[in-house]
Image (tube, rainbow, N blue to C red; front, side):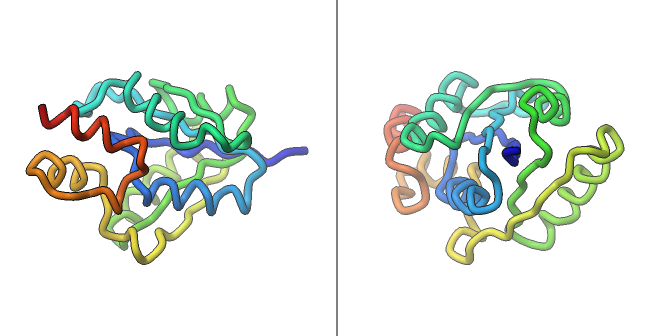
Length: 159
């Protein structure tokens, strides 16, 4: 029996911090489905199709990683994909408070789906997609913080 997890996020854009969590998650899970969220409350800089394309390019060579855009309840995606866990990364104590609430609610919605937290690697604890967009938009170099596939998207966004 394979162990599958969902790694959800907006990925606006995907960062090396996200990639690190996914790669480390593959040490625990046989398969990870990256769920690219279409959240009407958020107004991402990149379209859902662009965000999905970036994620797909980054993991094109990893057959144990799949991608899917989704809207609606995360536990619904987990059920649909046959996942028994939700993978989440934590950068700081402030992340934990929010993630704890989400994990508790997801458990209430489906007690069979567990949330697994992975601490961000030290070199990525300060990295966020919003910070990447802000710095790139002002002409700063974020190449050491995002996968190569993301760079052209950030360049196009500046135009």
